[in-house]
Picture 1 (cartoon, helix red, strand yellow):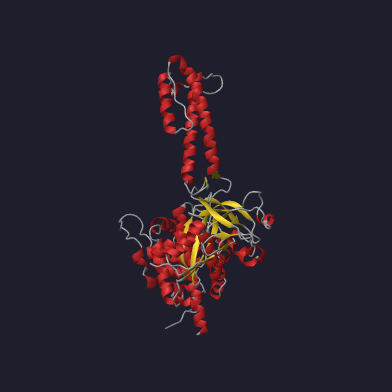
Picture 2 (cartoon, helix red, strand yellow):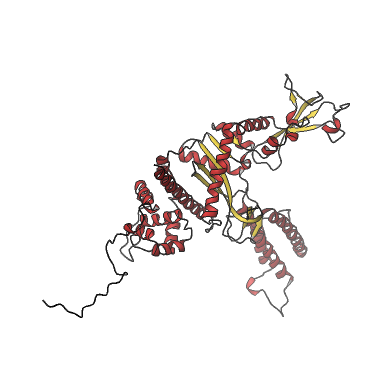
Length: 525
């Protein structure tokens, strides 16, 4: 057999060659293997809705594969779906998970909005259950903290509730003035329209229709533009209709704000304007944002909530209720900063068997400022005799007068008002009081005793360790999310889409933390 001398071999490195398995090109300790093993142990299929098969159109992507790609993307910090689409085409780890498929960013977006909207919380709990079982996570110690995440909204599109209410009252006056003018026209014909201090749009629309019938007016015959002179009746009807539309607009704005919000953004009505820290020195801006609450246990996000409230005090009880709904018990040691220490939250802890390890607003001053803490003329430092009577440093008795609610307080707190029986001839009068009358003090004995209990808890050895761990775990988690992953602004709009996004980000954070813990344990072994 003769061998052809002109035969040439055109082999290049870009031609296919063995082995063909993508896994063989990845390091053995790559996070994709640990991630895939964990997802198979969870069994994601049972948390996804059953898809109906359709004979027409293209074959859809496997929802389990799409979910794996989304979760693994958030685990690595791919919060942008366009970057996730690019990774599915260029990154071997994503190609390994997708079996060579490359879904577009619109496919991921539709999958998140339509499929994950109803099951993302169940998936979050399932991932946590598997991780907590492997790492033996202690859920009795819960470190709580919140952060203001900037919303995807125009920062100059605010609507203020108080301003809207004030403008509506000004509009009431204009409507009354207009109705008085209309009544002057109707006086000759024996008709009148009742005026009031407040109006509703339905009432004004009813009166507008009655006026058009009474004056035989038709909006189609109204004249507009230059060269035309409007009749007095047309001018009055148009102004009344304008006021009615404006009144309805004010009512809708107040309805969107609701009873617990003072503002919202026009581009994202679910976002509330809050003080958001923008730089490392603490300079802040008034921006549309969401209040994201995390409960951290052993560096993992055990529970989360997204709130529209500006204050963290309003977020503690909903977060604890969500924790109880998920794990069927309350944490024994909830640790939080001074933003959560309120009368209502302390009572809630007592009712549900939780220790008080939450600072109150004046905690730092009471523990570090000896001059303020030991001031004998503070009402909290007055002595209580054997008969339960409060006495000042000079020994004068303070008698109980009445109880009053604190203005603007929404936590059910009341203060007790006491008045000295006689301040005349007291040598400490100049230091004790500022008015010539008998001194009056306002105090809540129950809250004062709670503050003493909190100080004793936090200044113990256990309290010092818990405070240190809280600053490391809760604030460290937010630092990783914002600085390492670059997640500083929410992409989606609306309460439910924002919750989905935060849940995905939390799952990715927990998966990333779990992988690094496993790697450290293997290296230590």
